[in-house]
Image (cartoon, rainbow over all chains, first blue to last red; front, side, top):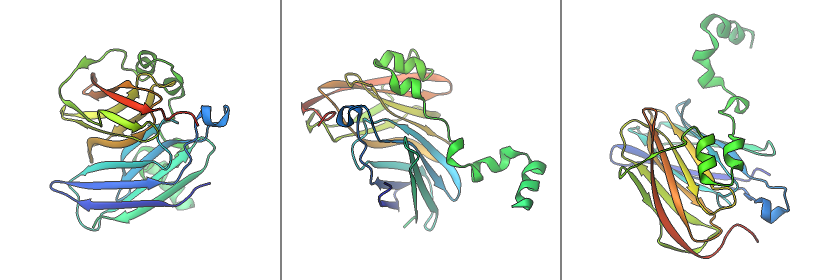
Length: 98
Length: 148
């Protein structure tokens, strides 16, 4: 099931550094005898606007951690990250740029 | 709700699609590319059958990964106008690991943790201005990370 997510967004020089952790088994075909369970889509939004769309496979590690860099940015910008897995589970988290 | 529907009709779905788009409408998961068993097939399915070698793609990853279950791979594209980055592990059962599309608000950079079954080249394909570029880096794996 959709476990907790953690996210941190901080201003760096000229960009915003976003790190996000998703709690997910990311189980491969080999581990599950053909019943893989993994995140397929993820989306990063800044103040409601989509800036990154990702498609990922079962070869992403368990409890995935991603880093992204967003152009510019300002303190208080709202960052939202959501995911959808191959069984229809979904989760999202949001944070303000610190 | 009614108001929103009216607005949608009036303004055209395009304007609001970005804000209201539910997950169902996300760029669909490229099943064909992810099910490809060779990186050449995966690249074909991604629409980038051939790619020019480029020094503008920087792959930061350990030379030797002790644990194939978690191999950090950091990719930066210095190619101007990069709109997407795909990461493939050549010798994994399904080479395509991830593909990211970037709009103007994001830098063409991503760091992921990937599973690697064995020592393999990691291939990164970046798309900029409709052209495809690639770079590879070998990562040695001491304990594979795809099975148990």
